[in-house]
Length: 291
Ligand SMILES: [Fe+2]
Image 1 (cartoon, rainbow, N blue to C red):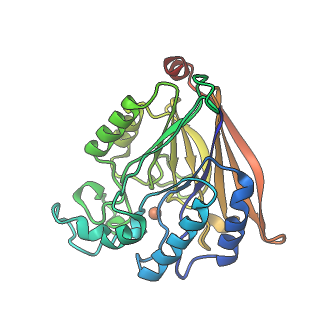
Image 2: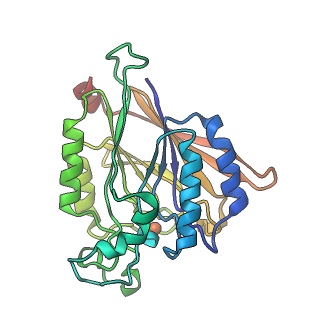
């Protein structure tokens, strides 16, 4: 069975939201026939109630089409609370949780095998890891203005993800969703994560096959260390990098390959159109291990 995931990043409800774009996406989601819809963080601009309320309405519309997975991004965290205090971090996520549920790192399993035929591979387990921790020691880098922007991927998060992957059925593709970009942005030349080499190593060691991330506001599809396919979603807000068209990614995982198609906004026609597709063979070693 092929798994198809609509991978949406950085909507930024609030002053930067592009409402006609969002409404067009809401209308087209059923036609895409995704098996899951991933909203990879930064639904809001300032973690305000109204922004989260519109974000929740978007997630509810999406849920009529397919299961929805939502995680918080750095803009969804009330980072100005309790900077550098390792305990009592709950307050950072209180407002987000009141709209999107207590679980900041949900998991979604899409069974393989196809219509009860049993076996046959396919399917996916989609795990999530929290990289948006507000102003935290682990996210600090020499650039002070990055204080509330950079993410980090704690060891305990990836240990949890590793055990989710280890316990999942062997035939399922291992997909990890994080907010911050795990590869350097082509235009921004920026990494989303502090201590990114260690983060990349942890992602590989957890047995991840596909990463879905965002934050950089430029879409891309690439491979980490020749091992992990990385889909980076662009943004749907008015701050697309370099004035480019806004976009979302559509990720297709079949037993042999992963394809990432960029759906870009055509302003003249007021609709999204599929444009280029990047295709990657799934790692032979992983595929053999999984079947
Ligand atoms: Fe972000």
